[in-house]
Image 1: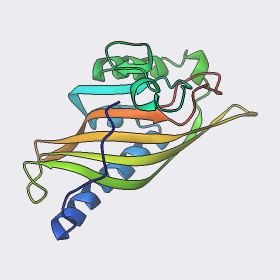
Image 2: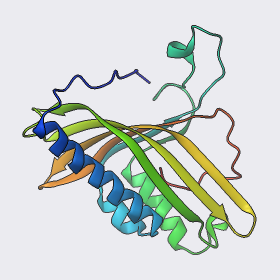
Image 3: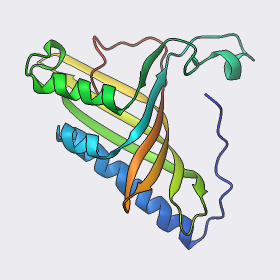
Amino acid sequence: MNEIKPSKLERNIDYFTLRQEVEEFLYDEAETLDQREFSAWLEMLSEDLTYFMPLRRNVKYGDHAERENTREGEDISWFEEDKWTLSKRVDQIFTEKHWAEEPLSRVCHMISNVQLLSAAPNVASAEEVTSKCRFLIYQNRVETESYFFVGKRTDTLRKEAGDWKLLRREIILDQNVLLAKNLTVFF
């Protein structure tokens, strides 16, 4: 992951208006997923989506920037998917024969610390925006399985026919060993 520095965008009314639009999109997306409206969620994704979650490694001090996260297109990752692959995961859930999601998990997405990193062509008339946020996802499976996924996301949204669509998502889990029995939640 290329480390993206905190926003240098001027924090004026246009910035806060755009940030509120981005936050509302992210909150709507979280609610859509929590309500298990997976087909509606797919509609929130751009056709040329990139959905990436690298593996994390424990590395020697000083090597974090170079080696802590696996690289997109070069190393193994938890996810390196597109919209078609995500739609196949949704189709599998709808078969009602998805052993890891039968019965469906109860999931709660919490999004916070939304910051705008860039806006093109500018903040006042943005057609594409990159944001960073923190997330906490709680998953409860059957009677006794509960898992927490905590981390950071960098999202790029693009305006398509007047609506924001998710163009790119990079998910960084703040753990290097996955404690959950499966990884069926959408981030």
